[in-house]
Amino acid sequence: MFGFACDETPELMPAPIMYAHQLGSHLTKLRKPGQSQWLRPDAKSQVSVQ
Image 1 (cartoon, helix red, strand yellow):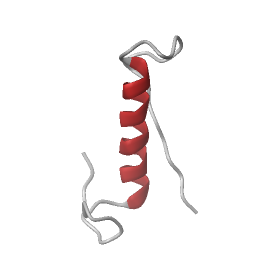
Image 2 (cartoon, rainbow, N blue to C red):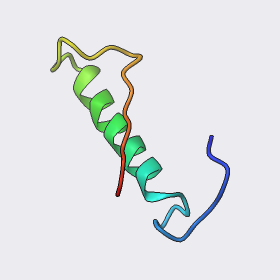
Image 3 (tube, one colour):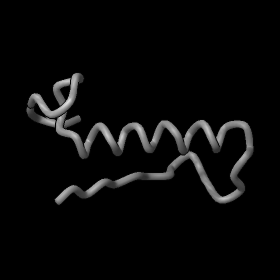
Image 4 (cartoon, rainbow, N blue to C red):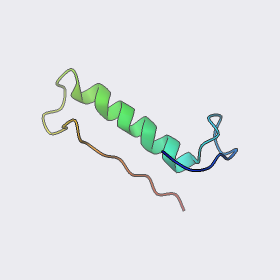
């Protein structure tokens, strides 16, 4: 959970958090049908923006 809203994205969340969520969703889509042997359910994502 993240503690504030902003206008960086339509979801009113900071952009790096939205990018990390989207990346995690894509990783899940690869992992579930078995397309990736190295991804596990505890895979994590982190996005840094400068």
